[in-house]
Image (cartoon, rainbow, N blue to C red; front, top):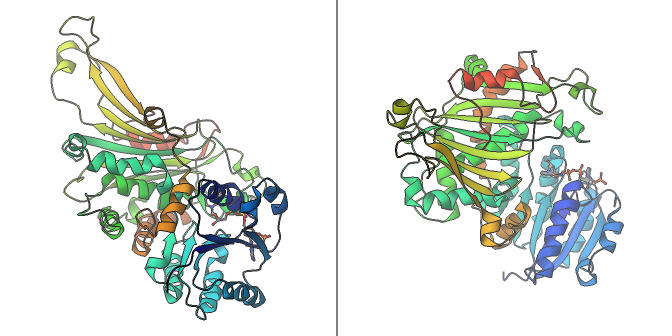
Amino acid sequence: MKNKGYAFFIFGGSGDLARKKIYPVLRKLYKERELSNLKGIYALARDENGLPDLIKEWEEDFSKLFKFIPFDVTSNQSYADMGKEIESLKGVELIFYLALPPTLFETTIRHLGSLLRRFSNPRKIIIEKPFGFNFLSADRLNNTLHKYFIEDEIYRIDHFLGKGAVQSIFSFRFSNSIFEGIWNKNFVDHVQISALEDIGVEGRAGYYDRIGALRDMVQNHLLQILSFLAMEPPCCLEPERIRDEKIKLLLSIREIRKKDVKNIAVRGRYKGYLQEEGVDPNSKTETFTALKLYIDNLRWQGVPFYLRTGKKLNRKLTEIVIVFKEIPGGFAKLLDCFPQPNVIAFQIAPKNVITLKIQLRPPAQRFISCPVESRLDFDMEEYYHEKIPEAYEMLIKDILEGDHSLFIRADETLQAWKIVEPILEAWEEDDHIPEYEPGSWGPKEAMELIEKDSRRWLIV
Ligand code: NDP
């Protein structure tokens, strides 16, 4: 059937994500005439929750395309009503966005899938994070999805992959031979990936207290960044070939044995977390985690990858730091200098900056003198005089075009759960959660994790 435009159905259409991200992106794309074929935006939720005030600010032609439908994802009647709307959309591609509390994903997919059996419209389904709570629930969710949708119709969102700086890793590595040539165990000493937040749970305790830092950040965002950073070049640029390389990388991450968890993973909780509104006073949820992973393949054998993330830390910063090996002998020995290693860093937030740190002799010094650490900062927005679009804008454009490169395939999500699950299991059996001061760098155990390898956490 020929595609006659597309319509969005936003489940959770009155929620935070819909208001703050989805509608502003659709409105912007519409204004820029990138949605000329848009037939409608259907916001689905039980209550409008102040949507009318939001719509008042919109341009008339855009708001005409918008319709709120009272909807309970657990009610058969709601889907019957939706069926009537769909009948008026013959041949239109239907894009269903599950911006719902994750506990409602399964039931929504089942109801929706059954309803869609009556229709032959082309369709896409977008699913927010978290994708499952553990391996089993993610597997179940995939099975439910596959009962009603083919993988090609499914878009599992990890909004970190919509970030311009994360996407730049790919071209930085695979279109610059000067970097790709040193991207391996012969040159790289170790890698750090940090996603630090300075805020706490900020009214989202109900969600966060069931999830914690490992599930919220590591299983998805940080492992996805790691895949881009460490994967092999794909044979070709088709989405499936890119995703093939990412899953290969995830499969190469050394399995964590439960008995080793205490040596490679640390968790922490900021002081005052248990007193936050909505947090269970007996909560065992971590607000910080740091871990060390190894990738057992020819490229990365023996190179540690340190990951850390947490809330109420010293600053807001998402950054990847690649630390290179020191040059043996040379200046360090001759002059009793204290050379620093070369570093390539990708700052992902708050700015989009690639930094190269090198050792250089200051030009006015004697020929043989201590090199000092010097830096080249490549601020992408400044250099290209372009604002990098919001992550959701990038992803929604890809969905419209049917490009899956930046979406998580079923096997990736399962493998990512397999990687972190032994840690979750070990923590389940251990009640001790180290505390850290708000505004600090996390618990002292996180420092020890890296310092016992004679390294330290870096901020570039
Ligand atoms: P909210 O709690 O703000 O919104 C939830 C939405 O779901 C509301 O519109 C609510 O409306 C609706 N809803 C709840 N129960 C039902 C029901 N039974 N039937 C129909 N609708 C229902 O959540 P967020 O918008 O923050 O998050 C949504 C998803 O997006 C989650 O998976 C989250 O993890 C993910 N996400 C959110 C981000 C954000 O910045 N907010 C960032 C990244 C991911 P009502 O209660 O009126 O029915």
